[in-house]
Length: 136
Image (cartoon, rainbow, N blue to C red; front, top):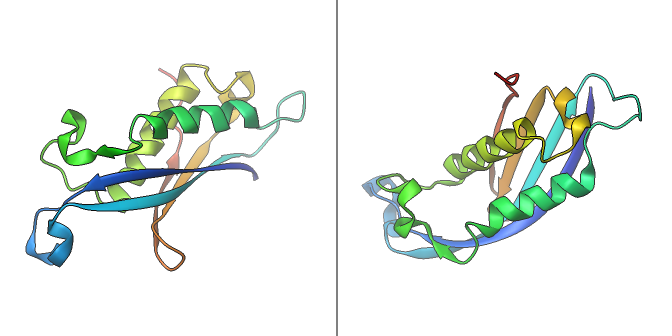
């Protein structure tokens, strides 16, 4: 299995509902280092898995829509706890949409799996990984 990864970061504010979150129920900030790893069993005819420049640019666009925002005020996240693992899935979903829309170049059509990791700190992170569904 081949893999290509890109990395960026995002700064957000949010709060959580539920006693299990303790003081994180109050509004607080977080900075996440975000990794996206694209995987495929084969390379294309140019020996390319994904255009790394396009992947980097697309990840930046996805994160820019969240950067310096209070996620509690974003309608798309209304009523949800934007935990690290939840946000990993949200980024994964947007990257899959970008693959299907062709924004990562033609080589990305061969991507079969995607893993998104959000590093909350040097000691804690969460990820979402799944096969990339074929285009419908």
